[in-house]
Image 1 (cartoon, rainbow, N blue to C red):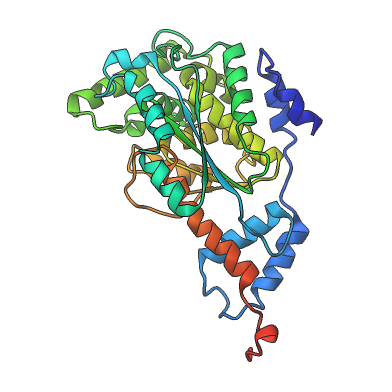
Image 2: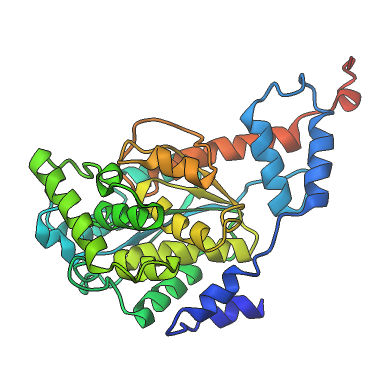
Length: 344
């Protein structure tokens, strides 16, 4: 794992990360073939478990076995602040980010309850809350050095013993940089990527659109490299999430993506290498902005659609139960021969 170790030392120009994205491990084709064969022998009609069968075979490829198991799932929530909140893009002050981090630590948030219910380990990672990412309408969100450092921090946050990983986020105002990332990567009218976030009114929505348009104009001519899009338009927690998703890939750990902001970090990796998210599934489709459109662009079908727009990793944590069930069916069900059930 020399490449993994090397990237933990931030490369000031992010060139080390770019190189790493070109040499990602792939799923085990032999395990996928064996899992497909086993699926055909299980005591059910072919295809009767629908997407659970797809998920189980996907898991098999990353775990390298025809009988995958999820015994140590983990969610890491990354929190960051954004100076762009001063432009009125959120009805809440940025102080709420730190207050919610304390709430996570006290076990009082929605993500705590869902993780407890699902047997999921939860960790929380504040990323320089007292040093907000710069106002993206006026400057780059982060320096190259800071962006690389936060990516490295995210990589280090993936528990070494987890076998299913999900990232969550907390950051007042962070749907605005997420929308800016999408607009920079995909082009078109910025307004189609901007949603109401934590509940802005019509005037607030207009301010968010204006901010995203201003940010794109300010950084015009410098957005051809996806990693520079992340550095200029993203945030500290978004960079850390990108690092965590990448680290999971290097360790061959499957990932369940959360909502709108987490998917923005994933979209950066996908833009840099279209195969970068092969180890990921979309946990849910958020009610925020153009999340559904973005998932289609990434080739990901959400496992759940519950109208969630909270973040925190809640959608990913809920979807992990589906992934665990898929693994259990694939590995625990009897075959026709072992159960003495007649097959056609």
